[in-house]
Image 1 (cartoon, rainbow, N blue to C red):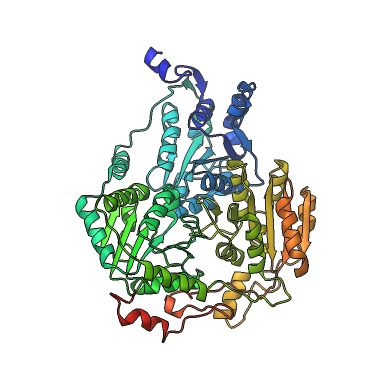
Image 2: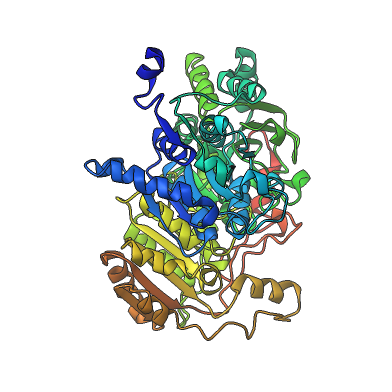
Length: 614
């Protein structure tokens, strides 16, 4: 052991098992929580956690918490919730075979939403691989098309560097999930801990260094501001890349400096304070009518960390139809021009890129007046505001979220399942900061909300964490109710129960002539209140009377420890606005309670003189 190595890490040169190496690297990477379900092929590493924590007995704050879920998919979504809420890499650990294959969905979910997690999967011994041994599964093949990268460790001398590199890959560039497959004999190997070292992935590191060093030239800055100065109706279209890239502060400063309104994607909620005058909340299939109308009206679209996906731009050629210029900033070069052609683009980190534009604009004393456009946008927000049937005697889900939002003031962490309740939550909650909104965006994975909320509760113990769920979605991972109470987490579960898969029914009403195949009679017997009570929730309540709702919500929010509130909502309540699949914003259906735009008057005002009307 050289003195140089000893100075770098106090344990360098210490002989330890491969399992101990794994846990030590996790600790070195700052991991404080691991979510996982045990099994034979991963037991050596589970035992290493026990022994590591035993060695930190006098320093419990340095221990690695091991959180055991009801199943492996829950572990994956807990790690994802932890990562989404904290910005750190989430970690989960499962055994081989079915344990590993049960995590395919959370791995793909994290890949689709660019969430940094590291999954450690047990594997049969190297000598048994390929023999169809007990609980063997070809994880490299299965996960290869789902993850950002998959490592199979067959050389134990490279184990330490592999685990450390997995964290580097997960968090760098466009974040994503990395899987490390760990044969049992590699976990049992004995060798020296180095305390440093990474795998040789030169091409990847060169690309990452290029991204970090990417700088907007003076010429490109000038081109951007030339377009902005010629514009009278600029609009920022911000996506989840602003959140994952920690660029919310720069985005807000950029928007406020030149008074440019902002629409966000579902994944971008919280990138700007939704209560701000410049915020137009969410655009897209179920976005605000006023947000979609602003997209229709803008003459310069500035996309930041967004990818023009089909829920936003189903007809890309008709998205932002009056935009004379489209600019795009993204960390992933593959997204530039993939869906919509742009006039100006920069591949780089969102925050750094926006900072360079801000600095250039200030140095050049660029002062642009957009007051008429901002006033027009403000009028859109008033005229086409969110709305629903406020006179109904039945409990409207929008009303539930609206009242809960008053109590949380846009400062709670909101996790959701997938379905109508997800969209109502996105529409009617405020998000004053980034990382308060946790939802399965691209994959749309039912069962995501509850385990994600659990992960967030471990990541942010000082924040209120609420899982807004539906009766169909929560069933997918209902076993995690017990995980909440096992660890006495102050997670609050709000169940909006409409006795079925509401979003499926809505589509069947709209597109399948009311043929409710599979959504009319199935799975109505569950008594969720009894289920919550049996799992030990100290606060459990069901509300079916509208007059009781506000007081019940107040008690729910103020309850100490785990809380469960089921609200029986109007089964026929729909999610509006809605832009049908393959349709444009001109064809948006606003429903019976949101004012639609008069195509003759208001749009004509925009078209009369695109250069000076605003």
